[in-house]
Image 1 (tube, rainbow, N blue to C red):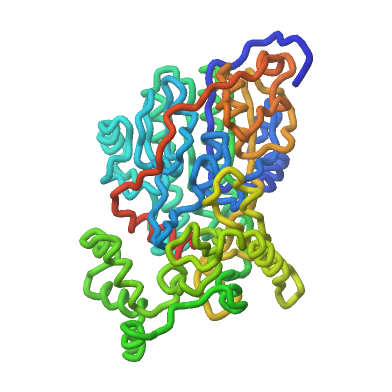
Image 2: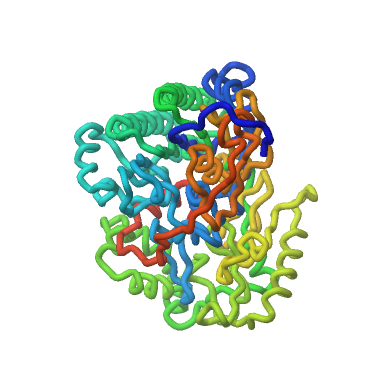
Length: 532
């Protein structure tokens, strides 16, 4: 903290402009060479630096961390799908984010398109939910009547694209992403017009992440970033008019991938995971050449989709039938009565212990030794060139306050993307996925509280909320894992010389399930390679 006496006033309010999946390396280079003039202006007139993400560096963990100031063991979201003690899964929703986001603690807010905010919770202001919202046919706004205004002003507004439709149509995909981006921009304008001097605007553009997953071509990415730069210029004007600090942040970075890698194959090969044997019903079906892929393909040909089955039948019934049909699914086709460990969702490994799972086979006191054993195993895996394939993180170090958190996180090194499917090989072709997540995102700040030309060092996603709250004179959650980034502030600004105050967080949620059909969401996530 600066010891100087502050002479300038602090900002009245804050604006978070979220850009999903934008890496520091590209912003650093293209703001320096003049390709992105508004990003360059942010760096000249404000403070900037890389922003370190969660582990794993994924949307459902990182945006709640940005919005709450706490790591996943406190906000409660570890991926896209929540695993139960009976090995079933459901989509995580806003109700699983047990730590309330900062906009629920402030007055007169405008929140738009932030992932993991569906269903919309009550707040003082307006909210439009983002990623994992099934569709605009669901209640996706607070207040509910805001949806009618959006549909009237932006008739083509939609939550997301159906990415599998564009796997071999990248030119069409580029146009569709541009349309999504423009509709999001119109939504942002609508919210800003309706907002009454909000203490916080928090708006996220997820288009860069979606675009880069399928198109990793720097010339085409730069053209997309120029659109983002134009949006940033508009937001700079708004924040100047409203005496606001602006925070431009991404939840993680991005980079190209060359191969897929399957940790569940390693577990099966080394005797830690076992597939269901094809006996009984499964064996009879297998002998007839009936597999899950063939069944779903036949149903699709007569117009019966997985979405229809899930809407017409209870999820538990669909799961129980699926378990009887042969296949290689990381959930349905594992024999948990023999399996010691398995990888679920985005690289989260669980020890199948008797205290956590119904068919657990590992005693809880054996967990630490088995974790160490598996960490050593995955760190030893190399490719034909002797390069390491996986990077491994200890769950107890990442998530110390939650005893039911993942035991390990298994991610690929830069050229590899780890997937949880059960396969016959260690490696696979990533097509149509061209690129995926990296840990290093961006943080650029500008406004009355921010130091011109400043450098932000060591920033993490959990530091965003404490920094912006202190910058506008608001207390920071008492249980925040993040710190206030004083090196972002102007030494003469009031926040630089003032003490951080704290408040006790209220409104904790209990993680109740949401009874909705998320099959459309699941299809979109499959198209991006996030799910099987």
